[in-house]
Length: 119
Image (cartoon, rainbow, N blue to C red; front, side, top):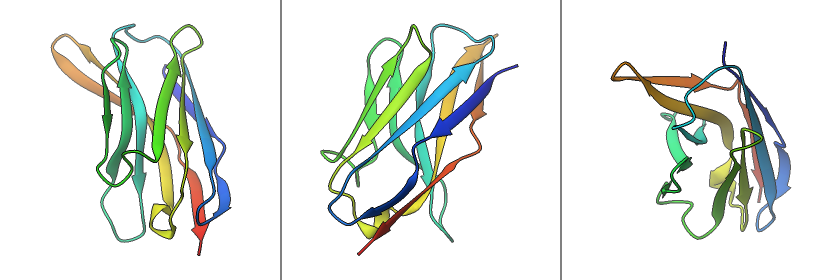
């Protein structure tokens, strides 16, 4: 069974930085994408950053140039470094693992970690 455990959320001031980490455990395809999504109160969950095992990255438009995603494939971890934080970055951040099984996409999610940015 796949499990994703996030760490590193908390409170930061505007202009500050935080780092989130996620550890994936269990059995899953080595060809996969790991990344982060976030959901603010009253809003839909949105992509923050994702990094495929082949190296391709994708960032949400509001975080490009401020957030950076990396992963350690050997340790099954993904890290999100967040800089120049803004109050609108306040949200619950979810770790995501995606891979394909029998031509069907499968998503796993962590429980989420709260990031609060004060002005």
